[in-house]
Length: 535
Image 1 (tube, helix red, strand yellow):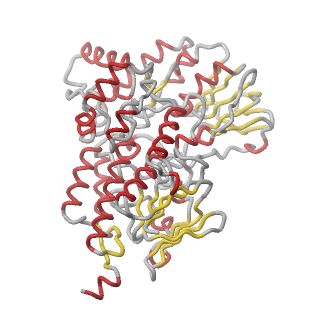
Image 2 (image 1 turned 180 degrees about the vertical axis):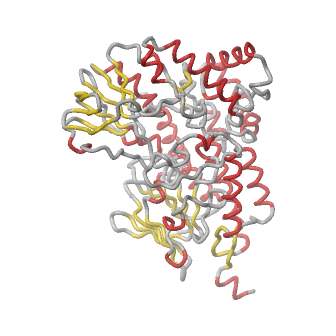
Image 3 (image 1 turned 120 degrees about the vertical axis):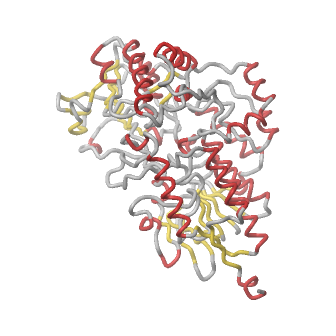
């Protein structure tokens, strides 16, 4: 066939739709038994999107965005999964998806200029183009804690939650981790369990979502101006249309800063980080926002020692994924919730009956690992991908991921990565970034069709220049000051490179549009045999 797509999340679904529009034959290989990607796997209690529903949706079809109705300001996982299923059915995409099919390897056949993909079941799928829509947060990570396999109770990972309901009623539950997934899950688990013990290594900043039922007038206001607001969002750093304050946090007095932060806190959501223009580039400005949030935590959490342990002090606010919660800090006022500060008393081992720290053992009936993902690269490197001369992607990325525009790696012809390392991806509204990447790839493939090219790959000099540029842009910000999964710090032995492109969705789009206008500058094309013979 013309193309094979790996992954049936939002990126894979839209890519298939665009390829059909080009008249190309394509199929999706999907490990799960349904569409949805991250929203298929992440079914943990409280799972919810941190981008407002009216913006976390496709914009490519106006009838779709006008017809679909969200029930809440921030949609929960079941509703987002229903939306993904609706998109698949609405555009008749399922007939070209092979479910329960996991890719083990992908090898470029130089003689035939084809990709040969082998599944874990031993089947081979052959296509001219291979498009990886595997997601940035899809390779779940379990921590290497001694004795993990010895635990006699039930264990779960937030990124691989069971499809059947999990009932924690009457159970002693331990949650290991306090990242975004844990911050969403902990309040829900606390309400159900007999006792919840939270094992926290690194506290994270979290902003209340102020989630509520969708307001009819609010929905109507968006739908009346959808085209205009979508265009505007594409010019912004995050791809999310919310009010941006152009002022520095340091050019207003303390009272004005307090008013701005309070208003943002009360409104809720990640727009808090747009309170002032320099929160991610100026440490002194960032300190004012971090101090405000720490004061809120101490005002909410009644026990002083617990409040202090929940206050982040080792990274600037926003340089780790800013979390959005529904009653997270309030949960620590419950009598059935205990916080264990692992900085003070680390985990020594998991035992058959619970978790042992330096202070003793916590008896548990169930453990929830909210320990995140091998982000950005984990899903790709989980397959054996070999390009020209048998060179592997793992070897190409031995010192850290490199890719031109986050789309293509040198030496891997006709292999595309949607929202790969080196693109805005996880620092943006993923729906906006997915659409932009898919549209760019579709335009590039149309260019190949028109020119008769057999292969395309990233030029080595263009890849090197892009990686240098992305690194220079990152160093102008506070992001590299944090030991975050953006840097790969959570994976032992992983090269510590800032992986997403921090220049912003709008800037990145302008760069890509310019590259396309110049005949896809930085990409090398080779003609087909018939075209070369004719020339």
